[in-house]
Length: 290
Image 1 (cartoon, rainbow, N blue to C red):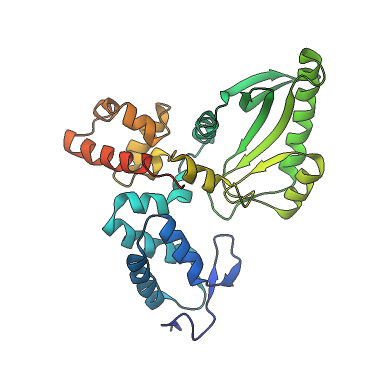
Image 2 (image 1 turned 120 degrees about the vertical axis):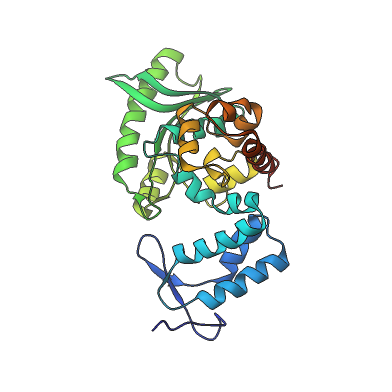
């Protein structure tokens, strides 16, 4: 029989994360995520009460998430979409190409000139690079590592491999541009997490890392929230097959959908549903953290 904790304060409840690790349930952490999704203080308290009735020692974070998502969706689809952001980023698969496109769009919003899926000549060999981004004298070589499971992490082998590729490309760039002409950076972007040794190695060699919550002050989650660039996979009013079709057509952002609403008709969506979908997309496009 499940040993439920009705108050979440009378007993230390442990939850099981996606990677199998256990941690103490923190009500504030859930409350913060609900508020970031747009829930009012009153609605947040209501959800926390309902989650409290669900709690038992060893409950999965996935089960808590599903319950909170259902409650948010019953109140506001846009709110539910913001809350589901991490899962929506993982839906940019199974191949990582839509994720690369999404990262490219995020960089464009920051003023970079962007190319994706580029063959780049190194000093020794030619490399296929996910994203090349340039702004003023800054030039980035970016490799995207995409995972479909929240528990998967990017270990130290990935930064080791990417750093060797970056150094080969950097040497060629310096031969072409001349030393000191530009500032070159190697980047690894990951939609889940980096291991501690991956972070330690990257810091040591000067490789830049970006993941869901790293660096803590400017991780992927925060950059998406600040920019308002939500993926179309966030839209709960779209069916899974429709999301796949939009990604197949290189449409990865809700903003792009707002700019090209006719594409919904092209993929066979009725006018009535299209209006609902576009309303949801516009609500997300207007969402930015100040």
